[in-house]
Length: 234
Image 1 (tube, rainbow, N blue to C red):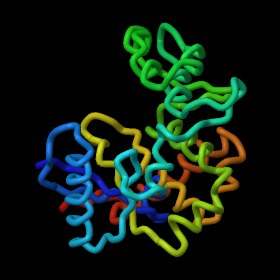
Image 2: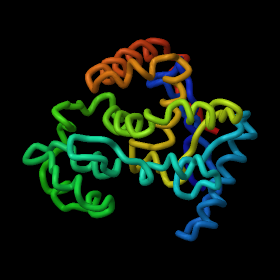
Image 3: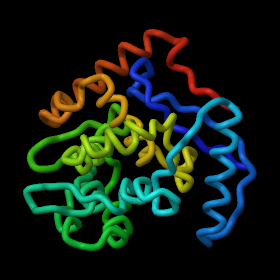
């Protein structure tokens, strides 16, 4: 068994996303068929709790939209050009004793993620990209910023595909393990839907500072309402 989350767009939850977690039988192995078994198990568990349909956001998704929304498929426009989201995330890390390592913008995503400097430069203290600095709190604000910037130019197309005729109740990423990571492409996708529904997307993308302020203020506001802040487990 393993616990895996479903991310539900929710303007009334902290960070505009409600997290509902399910314990599911988990098939081990790296074969795509094993991954898809786990996706089916998670979606079935969520459906029994009333959350359906769901869209898997990963390269393992059976839906074209889910594969195209995978972070490894997305690129971010920067002063260095259009680069993979993973490179932008890793290369923008600022540590106690080094960074940002801008040369990681120009390598391949897997090499960027495995660069030894990311483990040898001390404590992570911030993120910095194109002259804008992001704090470590809210905890996923920088990754969310990158993800939203990557899909923002396609926002109307996406509104129709994932929140229009096929209005998904939530989003999953079967590779995401909440015990090992905090950033998740499915969570960022749910945030996109919430911001679009609330009419806040254009404001959020005005600047890095505006996005950080918006997220920080919304989280503080909603955490003052405990009944809306709890994560659910099934």
